[in-house]
Each structure stands twice: as structure tokens, then as C-alpha cells.
Image (cartoon, rainbow, N blue to C red; front, side, top):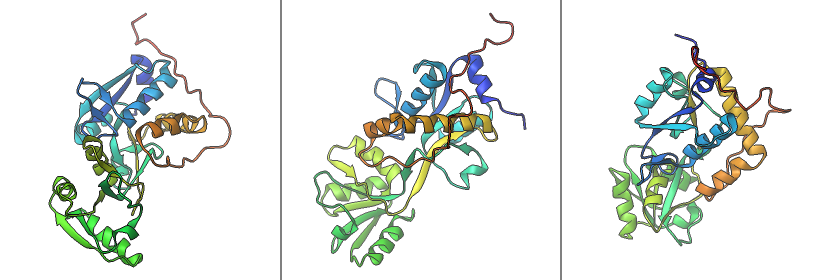
Length: 266
């Protein structure tokens, strides 16, 4: 496998290349005017500003998850964004940044509801998607808290939400990262801050390029320390930003990259 030099590639082209798994609002999506937007797209722009002095020095490439992974492997993209779960299995294919969002099983409800935790579901009906573990997680949490409820399974998240809109259930149980997009697109729906489980999401990076991984993580730590990370998080979410390990001392490397022209140019 060829050695990757992602930092060198960014310096040579003078731009950041980002593969974006589209349709993953609010993390990454293409808006109606064709612009790549979202929480993680905004993070990428802030990184371009810090590294290259220009938050517009980013090229987004809307793609699928599998095609985005291949773009990282082939050096065609520096980052892959789209609400990606950082798991041990995923680490077999890619590297990851520090955690940028904590997902996990949660509850989707009608805006203005008095529900704040699982105890409010006692004696109520709740919808859940079949086969993805949401039903089992909800029932286990209910048992732990002495709550009695009825779960109505549905094949898709959209069908589960239809029960909520028809007021046949009081909530929908599911993965936060999936439900947030539908909540953004559907007025009157909100995802509660409550997390029945926790699943870290992160930016995906080329595997084996430790220098670039350090640059990304040092940048995130600096943004966390100066409040920039939390301010961006608050612009997209209404819960508490994730904690982030801060390495002691000043960053060991300069976060501003020098742009270098390709050989034969300049």
C-alpha cells in the first residue's frame, strides 16, 4: 500500500477535498440551491479556514458511503463526512477523528410534548423500527426503570413516524443520527436530548496517515478550547456538545499549512 501524505496533497492543491455522504441532514447534505451544508460540512469549512486561511477553499464531492471510502483510499478526498459511526469494525477500513457528536438510541416526539425521559412513557404506546435493535433497547431501558409500555414495530422509520403523526403512539424509538434528518425536514417533530445508548460519530480520515489525523484532532481540540466548536454545535443542535480530550500544552505543530505549487509550476 502506498504511503499517504494527505497534508502534502492539501498543500499542493491549496484546497481541502471532502467526500460528503449526501442526504444525512443535519450532518451533511446538499440544500435546494445545490450547496453542500450541514454540521460536518461547516466543520470542514472551519478547518479550511484554519489550515489555508480561507473557509471557501473546500471542494465537496457528494457521494455514497462506499464510494466515499474508496475516495479516501485512493487519495481523492481528505475527509469523509456524513454522520459516520466510529466503531471498531469501521476502524478496519478507515481512521477517525475525535468524537464530534454522540448519537445512539433516542426518542422522537411531537414538539411541545411534556415527555423528557422514559418514565413519561409509562402505560403508553411507542413505535420502533423492526430489526435494528431499537425495540430491544427501549424495552430493556423500560424494564430498568420500572416502566410498562407497548411497542408497535414498523418496517421503516417513515412508517413509525406516520403513527406518531396520527397520534397512535406518543413517541418513536430509533437511532438519533437517522431521526434527526427527518425531524429537520418535518415541522413539529423533535428528537429529545435523552440517549438510551451512546454511539460516537466522527470525521472519517485516510487510514494510516497519522500526521493528518493529528492535524485534524489538534484542530478540533483548539476549536474546542477557544469555544468555536461549541458555538458551531449550538447552531445545529440543542443539547450539550460532546466532551473532548484536550492534549496538554500547545499543539506540537503549526495548524496553518503552507501552500506549495506542484513541481514545474511557479
